[in-house]
Image (cartoon, rainbow, N blue to C red; front, top):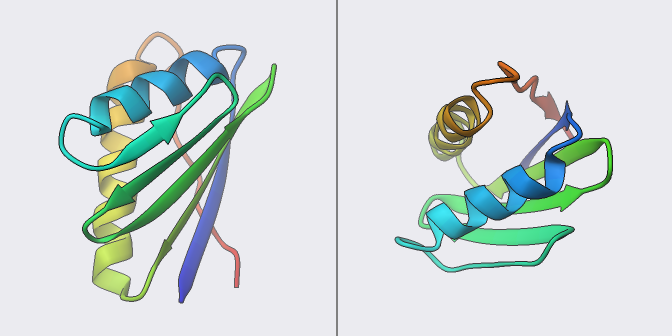
Length: 95
């Protein structure tokens, strides 16, 4: 299993978590509330947690190519939704 994590420091963490999950739910299974969310992509699983000051994201999948795709999808959507803050995610391996 390949696992990566990232943390975005932002006062809008809950807003972005809910926006991401609601957007992804149009195409894939997703559940969320104000502080946590889960998205089941065809290429992997993503869990998000929001606090007052940061959005933590953990992605899991079984192949490198699938992870590249999942990170790309999440990166592009965060950049679009958080354009005022210009958030850039820095991914780290959790293995």
